[in-house]
Each structure stands twice: as C-alpha cells, then as structure tokens.
Length: 118
Image (tube, rainbow, N blue to C red; front, side, top):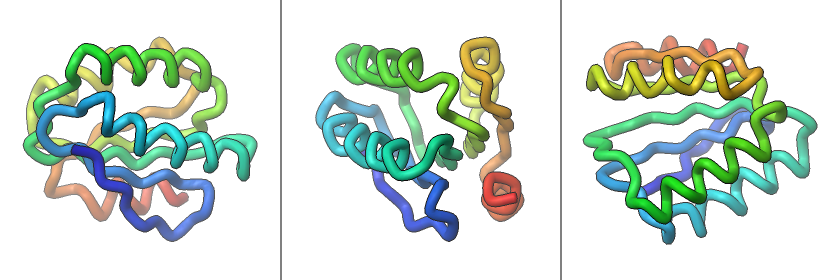
C-alpha cells in the first residue's frame, strides 16, 4: 500500500510504503508524482518504508519506468526504513540518478524530513 503524506514544501513528494506495492498503488502514486514534476522543474522525494515487503512485478516495472524517465528531475531522495535490505536498496539507487540520495533509520525520521526540506 502507498500513502501520500502531507509535506511542508510544495516541491517535496512525501510518501509512505507499507507491505508489498502493487500496480494499483502506482496508479495512485504516479499521477501525484507527475503533477509535482509538472509544477516544479525538480522535486524532492521523502520515501518512508513501514513493514515494507517490496514490489509486485507489475509495480516494479512501473517504478523502473518512472525512475528511468525522471532520473534527472529528482533533486534529493530521503529513504526512511528499518531493514538492512532497505538501506542496501538506497545504495543501489545512487548510480541511476543525479539526485542526492540518503538513507535514514526509522528513529531518524525527523532528521530525514529536515534533510529533504533543506
């Protein structure tokens, strides 16, 4: 499931991923992100993971297409989670984007929000 969170800066897309993401989640998420990109030349993305289990295949494909198309439109990505593989995922992401990408533990959520908004 994906939840769109309220952010304080208009150029920050704030989301929370829970469980396994589906294509239906991306049907909700992509218009939100595309509108942010339409309104702002570059955006920042706060991506919080809670009991996150990854992506279903169709959702992974939607994610990959978005990431490839918009790699240069992301300025910063803040990923918040509590599992080793989530931190590894953050490191894997870095070569594929020009964005500054940083991982935060769940207990550092407020620091992650401050970082993405600064």
